[in-house]
Length: 361
Image (cartoon, rainbow, N blue to C red; front, side, top):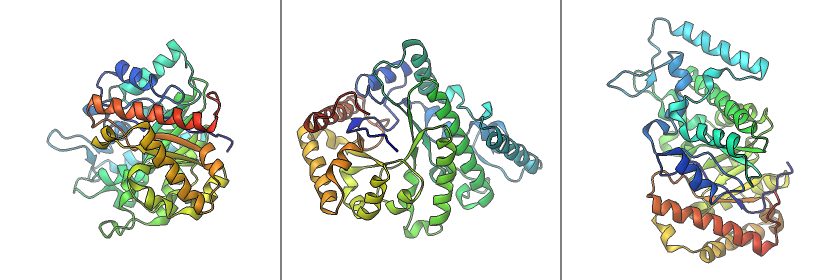
């Protein structure tokens, strides 16, 4: 990888607005180098709901009025519906083209479609790269159930469907974003990985998770897109870094100490060109207590910790992105504004300190 963002800034995904144009203007005004499409504060745009469209259309997931959407393996024509799904997946693998079925339903991704439309009508402006996000297979599998209220992730057949669905949706999204003619970063949002290694999630298997992540990663990478994983909590970071990612997105504000324990893996990751996306700005009320200077000092202190563990400081700085620690969709607009302003200003301050050309990427 030759991508060196040099402390440029981008966002995580969600914003606290329900109108797409307003949300895009909010992002573009502060993260103009690497804007991301905004996930709106609408019920239909929740991270899980956005990815059920193809499964609902194929009848694998049902939507009874009194229950949440769920798999129903008891349907008399379940096998036929499975056959239809895997036939579509094999077609996509053979042709490299994702069937339209795997596109976001328009009503569940107004932020995404409006973002694409504005790229076509207004151009890319000063953007040097675009960022998208896709839910992780572990997270979706743990939150989607069957008719008996059992998590789909613990059912091998249903887990396979979830993984392949996310893989095709991630590839479809990347292809759509790349039509703007800019490089694209796609980040797999995997908050569900916080449970790996905990007694409450003992059945989560390391090799299975890595293989599932790589199914999604390789599918998206086939478009020439850089792919990352975001976990906004502690996890076994060696698992994430062992997957074939280009970027790791972590909450450095709250969880840096745990992250820094994986110095050997981080050094190897950076040496092969990997990117650290530092969630350096808190997405909580703590943001009101922070300034650009206080966050800059925290960042440099954390870089020193990694440097003391044998990681080259210049490599870290050149191969770092600055982001909020998580999405801002659950925050007030006022607090989200504070978070995005801090993110923008911290990026500018770090780049000024290091003498990075504003046009570099």
